[in-house]
Length: 145
View: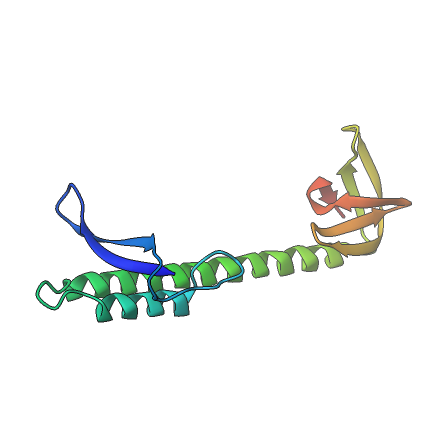
């Protein structure tokens, strides 16, 4: 179980401390070991409900925490979107090279030339088969014609 208490640090600012206790409280079971939006809101509501009525917390602190969490959520969505767009761009670039003659750097550092005959999509991104050589990464391509 989790007990939520308000603390004042050495800087004089009020913060939140989570301490495991034997008393009943809110428990969070999240398989990824990270708090999601719903967990954050549940924790915030429990903190509001269990605050000392004679010494209530500053409501602007809650708004600030909520705004920070919303901002983090948006940044996470943007990062996911950007990664997806990058993957799609790499796939499009690889497919655009099919049938074209390319120069690439092989594993020994030598420059080789051949025609892209196949594109494979792996978890690491698209790889090309150039001539009879499979598994050439898109980053190894130096020139296309």
